[in-house]
Length: 75
Image (cartoon, rainbow, N blue to C red; front, side):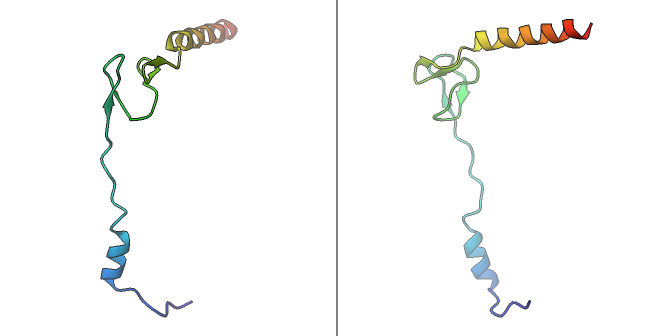
């Protein structure tokens, strides 16, 4: 199939002018002062808007318990 109406370079560039990437913006966690993407839970402490949303200590303990069970199973 042949292109009938070809777009000029200027028309193509104008269309692509919105394709540029924007730099990521960060805010500071109110609990641990780590850099966080806005409107997301802090990966360092599990807090969001001053509340503890994710219990990271429990999550780490569960991961260690699972790894220990897997190592015992391999023996």
